[in-house]
Image (cartoon, rainbow, N blue to C red):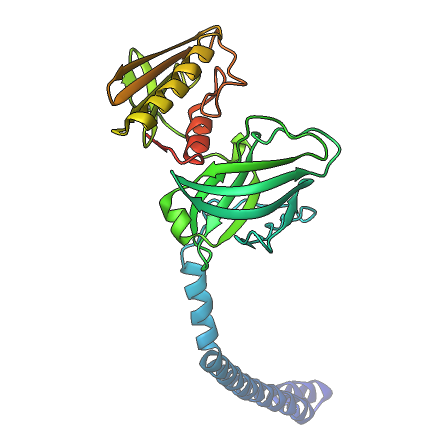
Length: 323
């Protein structure tokens, strides 16, 4: 056999060395694929159990979160916001004093109050002595209010301090303020405060007379009508009625009010007259505030353009009922 024939036979026979090399490679490839499938399945099983345990223990917290998230937002009403640098002002503590003429003395704005007592005579009164311990003259009609309480600290009545004169430095004044029978019988504690018109509640006057709004304030024998134009006081009508069957007492009272009417008529813008019967009389005083100076006339009179809230608040603190 020649060499060419040997070559041909050789090409038709498989090479055993090549087969041995190829077979191990195939086995390594198959085994590698099986191990990856097995690792993936174990890892997935572990992740599944972790998620299951997490959901089981975290379910209450998830539910609470969702409930809070879906709940409607509560909004506070009329609660002002404040900056971090702002401080909320503290409310002043109310100081109560016993109505005791022998033991109760207190000072407020350089005014010393003492000898506080209740009186029942021809009417009901709260009596007290005021001493100016400051360095300036004080107008007592400018916003000082006493508040009368029961022993359980229930407010009964507010009383405006009024005086026919200012109180000089070092001077003492004895004041006699009208109170209700209820306050006389039940009040045992008292406080004091200073108020301005900003502290008074707003008032709407709905009654109309002579094309003006009218606020009527009454107390026993007195009735005052305050006439407003666009919530600005313009005129006042003051009516006082008196009846007494005792001749001497009646005549004495009639002379007193006749003198008072004559004095009022001396003021510009003021007209006062009295109509009498044997045991009664009516005194009618009309005040045009555009012309009248009411500063020294009566605590029941107010300056032109005063607003209804001031009139109502202060008159009710002088025992009147206003509507």
